[in-house]
Length: 282
Image (cartoon, rainbow, N blue to C red; front, side, top):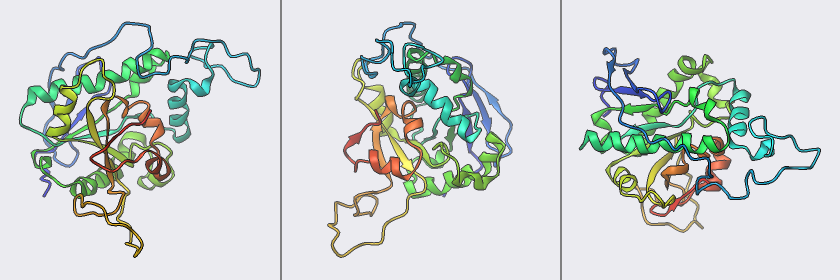
């Protein structure tokens, strides 16, 4: 059972600024200010290894293609920052980023180091596209409660869906039913980090972009009605169908480009891989 007494919402509104640990609206507890762990920022202007090397190298000459307002040498549809901004404009949303459930409480220092590494991938990615202005609204909210450790995906999914309803109005100023019309996936998907996932990220070499994973959960997932012709797979959380409603995915790409690529069921179906295989959202 998720206890509301200890629920904390951690807001990382901008990776380079102090992090604000504020109590959830459900708990009514006073906010607690904490200093941030150092966050690695990359000043290099070369392309991160996970960005295709041909991006931005040539000037587009096709008159029908609209150049990026951030980098005229690149088509707007290839500029990840432009694409993210366009997606947010469609919904009229300001805050973006997937919510993170902290499901391990064995070592607070390890958690701080994990978050520093996890969040630092975003400015590194945006910098190449001249999109650091979007950090102003990047909000990878962390939901913390000791009862999350060992909680089932189903329990967290139920909790997240309740959080999403109340947060739509609070964060974006829209009614909770707007969730069904929204293009962005902030209120459809969330990230789950347990001890295994955290250890995998902390132990991943800096130069291996595909090493380390987190769990991505599809909040609107429901088990399918079994078909006689379906081939049962090894049970995961008691589910023998192919899609179990969550997957392991490379940590570096999950916020970006993952946020503008994971919007709805079609995207989930396109990128989903059954655990224990680790997928990515390139």
